[in-house]
Amino acid sequence: MKRILFVSSTRIGDAVLSTGLIWHLAEQYPDCRITVACGPLSAPLFAALPNVARVIEIKKRRYSLHWLDLWAKCVFTWWYLVVDLRGSGLAWVLATLHRRIFRGNRRDSFFRRLIRGTHKGTHRHRVEEISDVLNLKEPCAPRLQASTEAQSRAASLIPSSASTSEIILAIAPVATWRGKQWRIENFVELVRRLTGEGGLFQGARVAVLGAANERDQALPVIEAVPEARRIDLVGAVDLPTLYSCLERCSFYIGNDSGLTHMAAAAGIPTLGLFGPTDERHYAPWGDNAAVVRTALSLKELVGFPEFDWNRTETLMDSLTIDAVLAAVEDLQARQGSNVTPVTTY
Image (cartoon, rainbow, N blue to C red):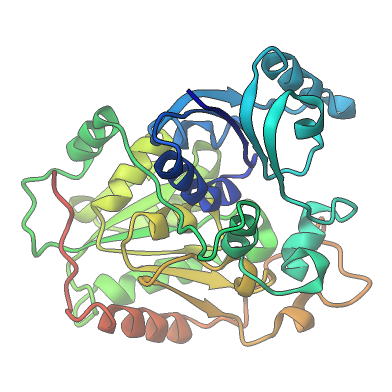
């Protein structure tokens, strides 16, 4: 039996983008047992993936002592392979036959790398970069899997008895960084125009997504949807259930966020709204995914020495509602139908 340690990300988006590698390892080594080490927020997403035997939560501590904690939990195992997407150096202090380490520019802060797009000054997608860690000829598309329990919970929220012609529009209006969050009032108007009379998704039910601490910000969108058509999932379910809910939706619109990557992994039409982050590096991945960005370029938004991400307000104002509507129409037209059916189990 081959034991594999897979060190992934703290952030949900990066963690989702790494999941394709788990599937690849499970296919390459069918008898392997994979231990995933990642942040507490993203940990639930890995539990149901193939060959995953254990998920270790990396809880950040001062002076990087969390790496010492992880080492202590892994040091007494003989590993066949250690895959470290964090470039932490952990692989060099564990007994392992093989090491695969992502070598980014660790001198840069997260936000500097996010804004610039990539390490080493290139503009490759994150999925392509991390696929290089395993020397793969083709990138591994992100792929999640929900447990039977998560699917059952999702079915109770979005019943499988719904008509297959019913449209469910998923909206995630909040982002972790204010700079990349489209204004809430824009989402309210977008939903009104899409689901109102004559809209592309006229009469659609609307699922509003987000974390519990995002509820106050998301509330105007929630309240703008008539109760009979409202599916309020903000802070209501765990990530595996939320993913299973996304599988049952017809179309997704959201900021550059972890939920956007989850929607793309679910295979539903996914539109990501981008501005001060680089879509060449972090666009939702997949044939059913698309991006619409601000009229102002990345360089115009953040490419000056005085830029301070800690103090900025939204940088998404040059992205108009009309531009997003046009992008929705273009992406939906690619589906070959005016209606994408709800997934049922």
